[in-house]
Length: 594
Image 1 (tube, rainbow, N blue to C red):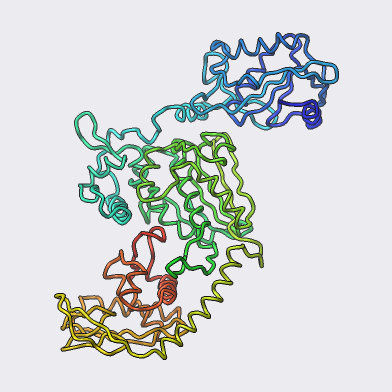
Image 2 (image 1 turned 45 degrees about the horizontal axis):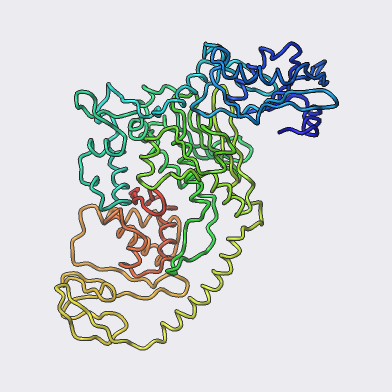
């Protein structure tokens, strides 16, 4: 409840976006309900009855019968002929004595999406208002229709595309999604069913009355082509922009309409994820297994923000989705307003997706927060890292929600995590040097090696598994087939780069492989000059190309290089534009550009 001091402060500020004064000399004025509708459909506000406006100044005149006025407000609020919904609670309508005069205060909350649009009279299009600055304005038909869509228990993305079949979707996009689904859920029964059945299971399609499987709007948006999608949603648009601080030009851009990729939201997410997170510093930290952690809480939070922009967008809205990256800032803007108040969204605990099927499609590949704590976690993480507090802005006509976050500190500033990481890195470097010394002076040890058929060979006295009878060692405890010749493993030097080892093979290389490796080598030489590093990069590229699902851990086990070296070589291959990783750090596949 407002106190006398609160009212004094509000009178001094005059009317604002959240405060409205009215005279109410002859009872509840008709304009009261316009402000009531406007506040309920926007972010809530306070109406104070008994205040006169004269030349921009406000003076308290009071009301004649405050108790009757309070009763009149309640009677009208419960009358559907007057207003469509009563959003008030008992404690939100009351009288206040101020300077010897009686005032009536009505605190109008933001209406729940199931109550909106709150409108005056019987005509939803004529009687719906919103707040803009210090005044109330009629909502456009577009804005009213958006509120009606949000009001429905079935989300808009559940609409069946009755004139389409699964063949109208981008089959490559479906295949990529199924690959990622299989990686996240390798034993799941859905990995073995046909595409049409799979799309029904994940909520992207369903059967019509005749039993024909047709995509729902969610399936079209997630797996369609830009032209096909825009035929149904004329204002559909996806745009990632990366520019300089002064906004004079774009240095990088990914747009749905440029015809070089599908243009759907799943492919858009994986196409720009690395770009969105590329400015985030990764301090040197190790997990409990002693492996370097290459992703921070900030990476995960940005992934959540990107997913939120795509999941919660109103695809029937007039504007598209824009992700804009500038100096130390990222902006995520999507069509549609929040489906709950900003306070509730930041507070967490409530999950209310505008597009429930799209939400599910992302969640099945471990993208998107189902617990409703996404924004709450982001605010906590930004505070923990010392960043400026994120801002959430809702604008109207057209309806849009914009989240802006800082992704880099001022020059010279470091986060608590970076300080901790620097200390750990220094300790780990010392330990690593000691480990190398110990390895170089260690005595040979006896190892027992199993052959491919499980029989036990005689013990061999050597640092590595020595070749026997034409066999050669791949790694400790593993014997290669006899027709293969592989150099034994050599431990990396303290600088993280292993001595040059030229792998040999008696097998004939597949057609085109040598020319591809030659092209990779030429590209890498444009980035580094050390021949040892060049050879290592080419070897790693070839190893990954054999199976695009191979991980860094696979490379460590097979190539016997350090994690730090492999991560470094991957960075060089990416810089040479011969290798790209599609998908998040945990999961995804390698894409080979040569």
